[in-house]
Length: 180
Image 1 (cartoon, rainbow, N blue to C red):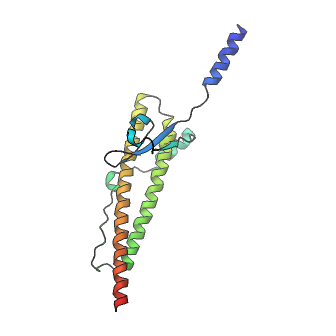
Image 2 (cartoon, one colour):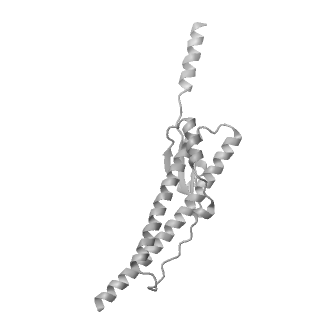
Image 3 (cartoon, one colour):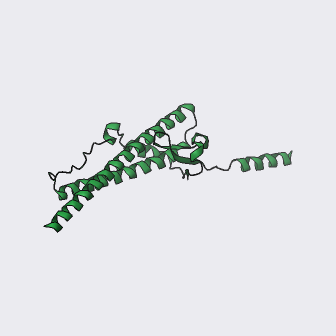
């Protein structure tokens, strides 16, 4: 009987070791960045080149609740700010255009930090989701993050287009100055 108790305790201790979880980042057919914890959801063609992430340690439950309460919810309208492209005409001075591009860059950097913080929080909250309702809520949050990442990528493309247009204007201006 004594050996049975020892065997049960040892077995319990062996199987009570915490397991780390991985999640994967990939691009779906529509070009959206996706995060998943199931490698089977990643298209086979992308499995060789996907990037995996290891889940980090959990915060204390009080810290999670405080972080959740302090984080403002953003709507999709807030995420998709419309930035007009730089025009080829010189109605906007180069200095004003540069200032606007710098502001956009700053906004993109802040949004990136917010997305990474949310991704970290989701990785931490994943361990907490035990019931079906909690898992469904977690999945909704992951979908929301995926949409915000897609909006972020679009904003990055807009930024790149504006920088290219600005650089073309600067090049034209420099060539005009050299010919004069």
